[in-house]
Length: 458
Image (cartoon, rainbow, N blue to C red):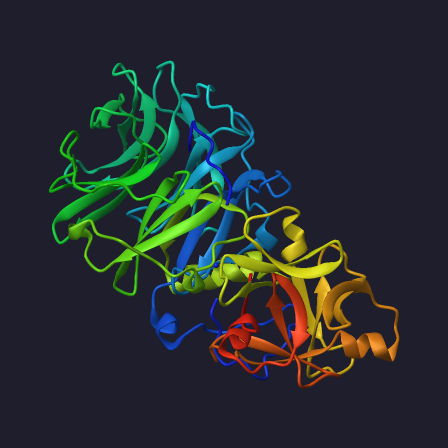
């Protein structure tokens, strides 16, 4: 949640050969790595936003991951539930695994970006397994003339209660992180200040009992800043890091651990940045290579939680895998395939229309062992080469068109865990980008191999 809008500005597959196509035509992808297959899976909750609003939706969206880095949207990236009360929309959703093994979902009550909106309530649902969302209610946290932004919660064992923390302006005149305590998420204690370093802070995210220390990351002055405490007592956290931010600022920190590494996620106007460390106590973070993580399409101000394998399997079965894919450039991993003016190119994420970047990878029109790229938002059109440039043209049913629109997927020329695509009727040429345009060329140099290597994900 941000009262100052931020300016606008990511998987890896295993064996690249002989990849089967599902009955929907979308690529079927198995385990991403041997380690991911044995690690705890994860769920991400988010709402969606795109630069011109074409992909903006204020409902609860879910994505899942086997490694905490590559995220697969569920329900075709549509919401799984939308609030029926309050402002009729949510921001900043949060999932809490409760002590009894069920879940509670909370979110800011705000549809849109009216930062002056003073809502004393938050949205709350109960969920047994993230397949259904029950007992919807508005939970009142305070009676102050201020908001209740970015609610999160944790179990405070010393109190035998859950703590709900959120951002609000109190008598200090600036945003602080408040806390209410509850046993049932139906009634709460009176609000109290949880953390106030003396300046405006919002969007608190906790990592608890890491070698006996609790860590709280938050947004301050458009940076992500860390505080720590040996307890969960109000007023006990002290700042110990300087800020992290790309140019233009960032919000919505998420602390998440995967395979022994801690990741700090942040949201810069629906573009996620990620840093990593092996030791939270140092406060030192290294930027994560954008090649190794892919956020859900249009995801905004998210939350990440580990879940049991059975919950992962059940939500995928319930909500379904996407019927489309996106393709990311190897050497420009901030850029994705898209069509614009019926020409193929790679452009920086995010952009609108975002549907220009969604493709159905269907059996090759000229050879079913190959692949053709069918546009999702213009389904009569396919990527084909013409004078070696990739165009989005209507399938005219001719043999020539079918051959021009068929490619053979091979192990990535720059990285065999990624993918490259060889032309069916010009087998000495591969799809590559050049000046950000997609075309087919012979490939011999290291630069050319990198230009011709892509990931297939969602």
